[in-house]
Length: 483
Image 1 (cartoon, one colour):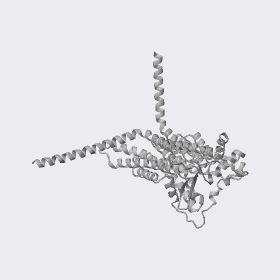
Image 2: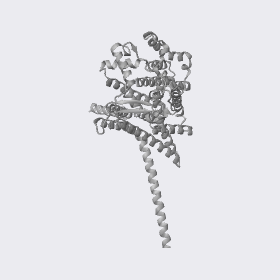
Image 3: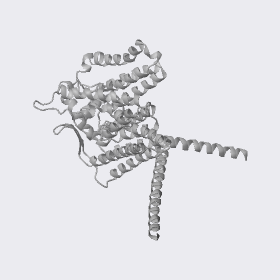
Image 4: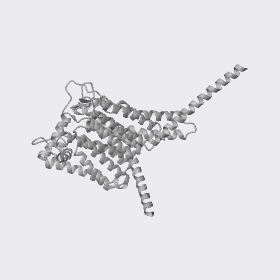
């Protein structure tokens, strides 16, 4: 009997632990499951770049080198092609398998955005940042194409996350691990250098005693120098200077064309959406107008802002200042490393709204302005997610996705199998959207309950006050008539 009671208690404890873990992990799991379903319902996409890069991965499978044709090495770093070739050998050397690999790595990027967001702002912001990142047409289009940009972003976010842990813990070993991951990211694609910007900002803001040595900084960059030397000098014989000698920097826009200085904004309006951009602007305004409330948010907001401004300025200089064709038409790739920071900034509105909501509740006379800002912020974020889902659903029925930078240029993906209304894959997509939204709602359920209860109480008080005022007026009117 005692043994049976003990077994039941143990079983109940295990069940409670499982329920607790499920409750804690469901928001991210729901987002990942939903994003996987949405991704499966669209694409795979094709264009000239995808065929070229997939051909290099097949070159590794056939000849052991990323040849676009035998004897001609692709003019890109090699690691992404070797990583893809590993899976192509195991499964099948088909384009669909290659895109599936990229899609899985894209889900890994979503996890890393969540981890970084949780480290900076907390779990609620992290969940929303992961959702914003995963549901943008920008990310979905790239993660459903065979492009090395997703692999590069994954390793870039990984070395950033490990570097942040290293700086916070004042750990030289972790920083060296971050340096090795940076070398891997750089040998995947050169755009990994863009993620050094937030890490550098974080380093100079929070470094401690052990990490101030110049030897530590030199040690951080030693792995990337060794790997670059081995590939470009020893294996291919091209020389280290060829690391930056890619076609993007020697191909200019056609003579007579006038590049638009607003080409990045034009692209962002398609890739992110106007409401997404408004959420970012509002997030900045709230942070710096009420710096006393958001002293813990501002350092991370500034880190994201610096990264966005620097990378965006580089892209603008290459595209408009130097009149280079690829940087101008391809901000979808040149600025892809900014997408996590756009997502973090917009999602931080949730954390800021929470602070404002608590502040308003603590006042004897709640400030209507604070409640209004909270309501606007939540509405803006919810509308941004829903609008991006709407655009993804609409784009899925087209045979191409075009990300315009002006009336004459942009970056396009071809979809050979667009969905049709009422099809099985369309229903899978709707189910994916449902999973994503359920993850957000589950994470915010307590705050959402408090907000709705507060809104209900205020509405009920307003109705009771109005009814009392109306009753008083009628009563005064009756007294006047009787007199």
